[in-house]
Amino acid sequence: MHKAEFYSAAHDLQKRDAGLLLSEYLRSMTWGPGERVLDLGCGPGFVTTQLLLPRLPLDLDLLVGADVSAAMVKHASDRYCHPKLKFVQLDLGTDIPVDSELRTPGFDKIFSFYCLHWILDQRRAVRNIFNLLRPGGEALIVFVAKCPIFNVYNSQYQKPEWRIYMEDVHRFISPYHQSEDPGEEFNELLREVGLDVIKCECRKNEYTYNSTDCLK
Image 1: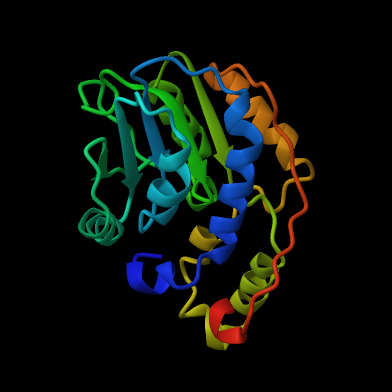
Image 2 (image 1 turned 120 degrees about the vertical axis):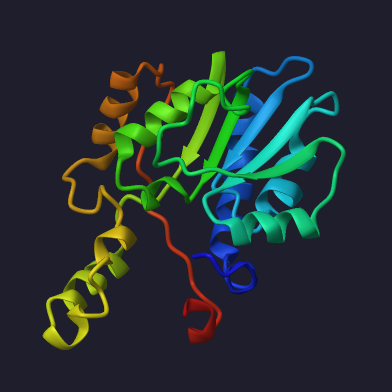
């Protein structure tokens, strides 16, 4: 997750879905002059710069890409340059101080693609998103609720010969994988934190990898 070069070569699924969802939802958002935009879980920066940035208004004030991985942030900063763009390190799973430069003055729009399911403390993560949004701000959040690979992880963990290597396996399984209704569970969490939910849904998604090397 922290090896930027490897991830850059194998995140076609994330790029495909981010592009499709931006095309679907961006036009329904309300845009004003000089908006501040945040991309949470920006990874190596491709989605932020090549898919999100070109779709934003020309009078944008600032686009910030944030990721928990210092290696990802460095990779993105070294590779992509734009006068209205910067990358910062941020752990969405920990409390963000009130005096943080990200919370003050906050953001008008927040995007997050395939990031939130990596965070065990979902309430804290969603509360951070709430705190980072300016009043009247909007967010588009996409993450994995369930996936067959998570069953494989659990199955392997039950085998004694593998367990020693997988003591932190819970960190790689979505918090919603065992939920009977992940959409409703997340919807309820959003409302409890104080966000107004316009739409919250689960979609079945399929992706065919070009080779086993890409899957690895």
